[in-house]
Length: 122
Image 1 (cartoon, rainbow, N blue to C red):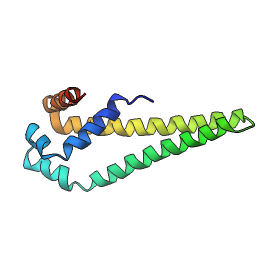
Image 2 (cartoon, rainbow, N blue to C red):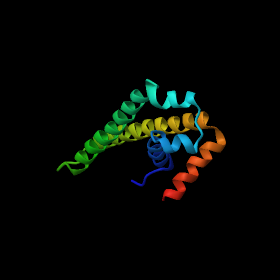
Image 3 (cartoon, helix red, strand yellow):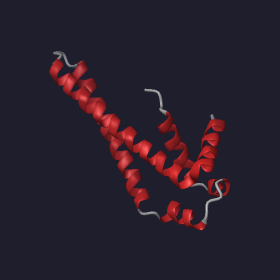
Image 4 (tube, one colour):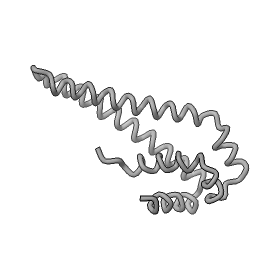
């Protein structure tokens, strides 16, 4: 599956967020340094994203197993497909929430700068 814009942005944001260079490029204040280094929910958020990614992989695995079974159970395949789509939707919504929160923290101009940094890195 191709990587979505929010997937790429989350990867770029997480990478740059932890870098001293990013702090300088975005002219983050001391308050933002505290947010990036000591914000307790940051670890929880990372674990939540990992859990959601794991859930998508698990549902995909179950779907593939049903599709490869000797006897196709169409109802089970459809139920599993629904679970897979729900997991994907939840993951993408959480990634989007993260990007929106970063946009709120950085503001329009610094967020655009982050988008530009990402575009230039491709």
